Image (cartoon, rainbow, N blue to C red; front, top):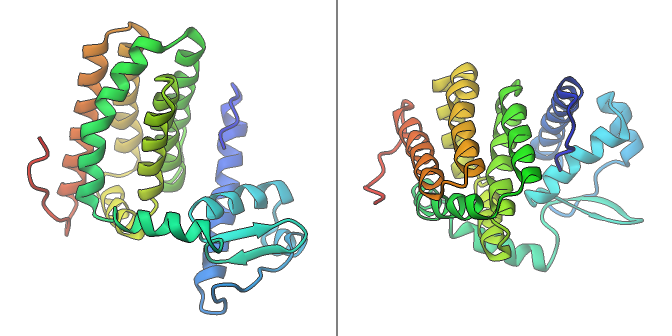
Length: 249
């Protein structure tokens, strides 16, 4: 969850702490000592072990829950693995979208149209929220913060379009990007381009999209989003060891 605030230093610090705790939790889950269904230690014990607040711990657990790495039951605790039942059905759908090319192609076909719709529907408050998203992206300190900010930016555009179906589709694509296949490719790309170029060029592209939406220029919003996604496609393929994509048009 993003807490909208003009105090960027506090927000960056909060995200940094969450990122650190998230890394520690991942190590706990994947160290080999835990199996699906095992219960994690109580929150107070984990907070003491990781030297963090309960609030920071819960933010990190929320990320893992959204990724189906853990599930929580009020009064019983937090458990390793996806929630039984509905979560497994959702996971089976995401498995079908693990190909990096499939995800990129879906975004390339859908998101420019969503940006154009956002240009038709945006209010002054929406523009302010989008500008805050860009600012948070520029302030990112590591891959986790940059990717989180990018994810929030694109989903916020879907919110601005004010169409729940489009928002649901973008949320699905966002969740699919958490799959291991995408994360492996994105780690490779991130190491290749570096954080400064990512925060600079990437955020500049986001800002141009916001300007087009603010000006209610649907063609420009669509074009800027397409150019942004083409830059992402190029970056994904330039990293050493990356696969080549077929034409996406």
